[in-house]
Image (cartoon, rainbow, N blue to C red; front, top):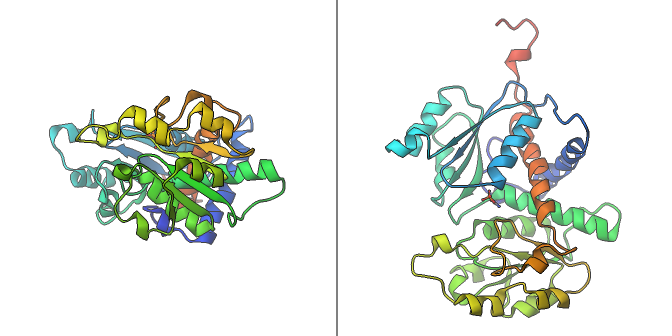
Length: 321
Ligand code: CP
């Protein structure tokens, strides 16, 4: 695998391979000595044209724990702020011998385009409303761990599980990657959103559209809440916040009505009190921090799948300085 640009790049064996290796990485995280030499000699640049807390930090930690040299470059503080194009930025850094770019950009499709420009591997860390494949991988990882804890025994099968994804689906890259990956793994996906925040074309996706949030919750094994992305809404916020909470918010009363064992997920950052109440976010059924923790292990696994098989010339016998 040279790049990870979209969840749809991954078939079922590749997806399970990444999740299985992530479990081994998670075990390493739990040990006292965390650092392994798997990516020694590799250089990874986190190139973020949009803000991030979880994705950028976890990629940096993932690279460092595998002994790669990780460097963060953001639009602010680089020559991008002087008007340098994304292509020139990438070509410049690629010429320095970078092995992998982890890229976040506001433009849908820009990260795919970048793969044509550079020699290095590319991981899509979120492009516009298009894709965020490592988020979907860590979400599936968290679900699998949750079901394993609930049911006991190894669980590799998503068949028979129902995931209800609710929120501002129109602006969400997370929903697109999750629909693709969860379908590959065999889960049933329900989508629920205000009509103004449902993507046009969602009816053609391999999902079931459900009007009533309460019906979606009643059928769900996982309630995945997605953020209302007010920064991407040019003409105000519709419906009103009150209408949104009443219709699609995971409130304390809806939390109490959930059947036992429903996992509550949110990729973060959360709008507490809007799409998810603090009671739900901090409840025993919440997997929100499990998702964050899984992010490091899953990104270690992804980086290893992209870079781990490459030859490290710096450690070859007879190599000269
Ligand atoms: N879930 C997610 O992508 O969070 P960040 O924007 O903080 O990276």
